[in-house]
Amino acid sequence: MSLLDIYVLGAPILREETRPVTEVGPEFQKLVDDMFETMYAAKGIGLAAPQVGRTERVAVVDVEGARHVIVNPEIVMREGSQKGEEGCLSIPDIYADVERAMRVVVKAQDREGKPIEIDATELLARCIQHEIDHLHGKLFIDYLGLLKRRAALKKWEKQRAGDKSLTRTVAALEVAQHHHRDEEL
Ligand code: K2U
Ligand code: ZN
Image (cartoon, rainbow, N blue to C red; front, side, top):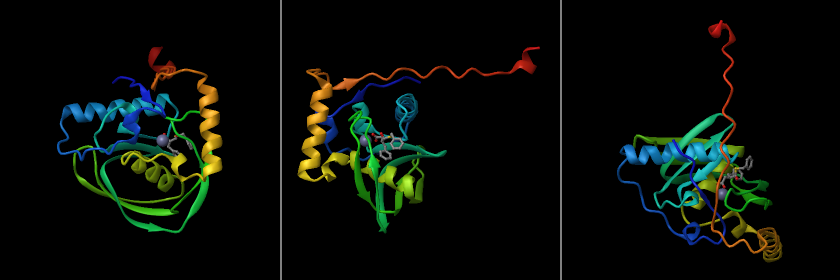
């Protein structure tokens, strides 16, 4: 598995529509594995293909251990509302409150292309809505009012301080030290 570069705000790919996934062969499954590894290394709980420069309509999520690969996802039911703080791995260090549906039911395919249905609430619902937005070129800052969005973009430009690169590299996680003392003895 490999760590992929994350595209940041300003990279055109983040604003493009993704293409429906039509085959889930080994190359696709390697992309999914690399997306999970990159998401964990970046300390995210979701990651969508455009964020790593790919146009496939696929995202990965891991919210409190609920791990999902969502291929060609469609929200078929929305219920209630929740307001909560969001960030984005493509817009580091910018946070703002976003209103989302409290509950969503999503029809998608899994990493083998099998149809799945996910009934999610709270943070998992928020994360899935955030990722599906990515698959249609939408970012959480698009939901902010004019003043809040301007403030966020001003902060983003300031912290970029002239850095024009459109990608960021993610530091590999410390390799988990497996303590098998008894087996070593
Ligand atoms: O898609 C992404 O950029 C990863 C997002 C997903 C996300 C955003 C807002 C709320 C839930 C999920 C985040 O950067 S992952 C970082 C994070 C971790 C825990 C809670 C909120 C955000
Ligand atoms: Zn994001």
